[in-house]
Length: 218
Image (tube, rainbow, N blue to C red; front, top):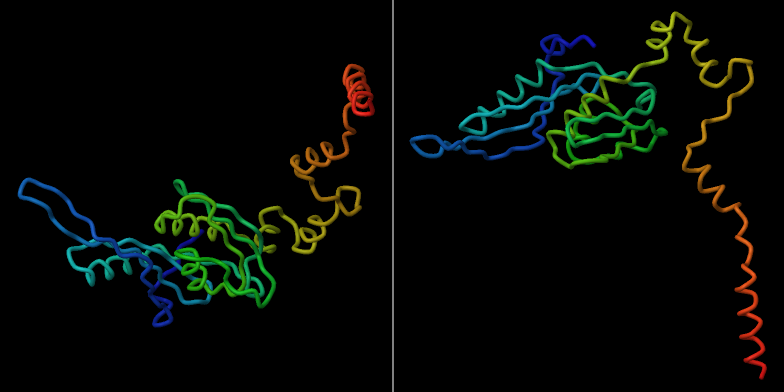
C-alpha cells in the first residue's frame, strides 16, 4: 500500500496523544530521564498514521511522534461509514479483530484502537482486542488490520474480474447455487455430542438397582 503525503492534506490533519511514558536510561554518570509518546494523526477522511517520539521534554517527544506518524500515513478504505470486511491482525502479543457494523452502531472499541479508527474516519465498526492490552502493540496491530482491508473493486482487479462477478461469486457456488456457509468443526462436535444417545445400562448395574429396590420394599 502506497503511503500518503501528509503535506497534501494540509490543516485537515489532527493529532491525538495515545500514550506518554516516562523512561530512564542508566549510564556511567547516572540516570538520564526522558519521555516516550505514541501519537496518532488523521484527517477523519480515510487517512491515518501512528508514530513514536522520544525526548527529554514532553513537547519535543510529541513533536517527534507527530513527525513520525505523518511519515507512515496510510489510506483506509471506507464503505458506507464502515470497513468493507472482517479482518484479524497481530503484532507481538496483541491481536485486533475488526468487523463491519450497521449504520448507527458507532465505534465499539477502546484505547489506541478506538483513537485510530476515529481518526481514520470510520463511523461504525466493531473491534475487539484478543491479546495483550499494550497500547503500542494494539496500535501497530490496528495499523496492520487497516492495511489489509480491500474493497470489492480492488479484489476484482486482483482476480481479473468485474466487481459484479466478485459479488455474485461470494454468494454463489461453482454450480450457480447459493453456497452453504462453512460450519465450524466445534459446532459439529457439539451437535454430535448432544445427539449421541446415552450408553446402554450394563447388566450388573441393572441387577444392583433391582436388589436395592427389593431391599427398600422390604
